[in-house]
Length: 267
Image (tube, rainbow, N blue to C red; front, side, top):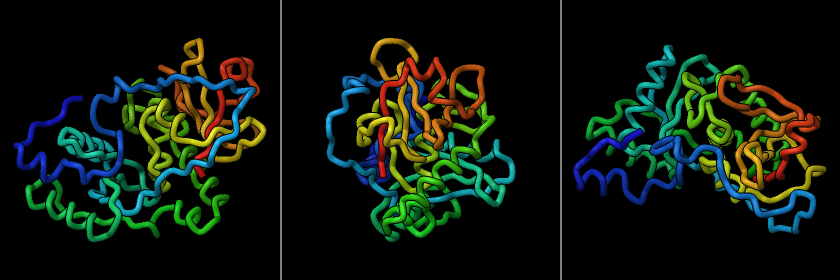
């Protein structure tokens, strides 16, 4: 995927340091893949300080499409302009597009008005903290959030896998799935599995709870090459590989048991 060219003024004003989300659904996705290097022993876990992901405070939502292909096309147009957009199926049945992480409603509105002024977007809606499940986590109710993360992931069961993918039309790769699920629930999870591995708090297998991420070395060695979302009862949701759909698998299976590297919590 290449980035569309804008003049230097617009590049500084509209695509500069005010974009707060780190790497996301935008440039060179296939170069990220699911990789990352593991250096820890999964049976000798060192104590670690609790890490928490930053909450997505305010995002810009644009479009409400009855046809998913229209949402996909608009998402790709935004991505070519360096905007961290992703699309998803809303509970209303419409397909919507979101991007950005802004500290205040005013910051998000100003950004949206700038983009509207230069013709990149039209009508928009500012998504605030009250619209995210992560709001319950901020008030201390992370059990509700964990269940919502799993429910969100379950909506994608049956979607085909595609390496480097991040679209319900063309499919998700493993870390694209986990990133979209977390961001739809208001948590700013990085894009690649290696970054996701680094961002979370290491936990033992016996400490796993719904919504935690589990990591595997499916390509051999100690390199993180696969990630899934723990769903409880030794099950996890994931995009398993080319030609196969997103599904639920068991940590107790011989294949995944032998390739398990460890787990991370973000709540």
